[in-house]
Length: 281
Ligand SMILES: NC(=O)c1ccc[n+]([C@@H]2O[C@H](COP(=O)([O-])OP(=O)(O)OC[C@H]3O[C@@H](n4cnc5c(N)ncnc54)[C@H](OP(=O)(O)O)[C@@H]3O)[C@@H](O)[C@H]2O)c1
Image (tube, rainbow, N blue to C red; front, side, top):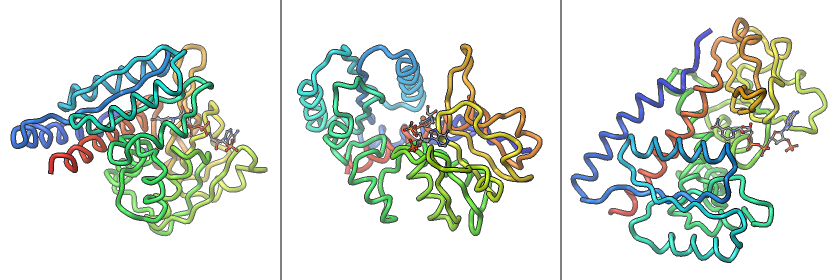
């Protein structure tokens, strides 16, 4: 089994990105800037934001942090987003999800200028993606595709099964896999017999948020498994795939942590840099 080592790959790619950013900054005399909006003190979100800020520091992207109380109103958040949209020094805006239930996340995401949509969640950018047009891709699907390409995995003609159909992971990754010539099946919580599909799959991307739902008996020998899930169980982070069960069956497998997570952050940095390049022209 070959480990799809997102930690090592992202480190390598972040270094290259840092060099590109340094060259751009010395030419244009301005650093890229990512505005980060965090609402409340959800421990997982605090930790994700910390990781994103650290990664920005590493490659030379400035961050503009807005940590708001969990009682913040929809109106106040909308006003903040509108002001960040207007701010010429801000290249990307990230709204850390999930946000408290009294807030309308879909509306807030679509209020972010599509030209500052560092996460690639804006309805227009998602529309471009589904029409196979160049755009800002959602960070996790983009990171997965970057990783598969870096490991020379040719998806042409493969049977691919995606478990999960969210707008930010499952659905867009299915689209991107299809663009590379794979034949796609998307499973979800209402799928009757997931194993029926996964047993036929050459590649499985599991993004359900359910600890260890993918096990050895569901996977054919030599399959590639990309595990997006992040679940905290007894204080430990584990994936949706049972790594120790699957490691002798798969040809390639991502670890959790250290697989898709670091690639997602790398893609966020890449997206911010892409947006910056558009803004400095
Ligand atoms: N590593 C990273 O960088 C990264 C980034 C983003 C997300 N994640 C993780 O990836 C996981 C998925 O994230 P998400 O935002 O896509 O979650 P989400 O919005 O909750 O979507 C989960 C999807 O999985 C499906 N599902 C739930 N239980 C299932 C089951 N037992 N069998 C089959 N399908 C099932 C749901 O089906 P229905 O549509 O029918 O409800 C839904 O489509 C989470 O663990 C999240 O923390 C990791």
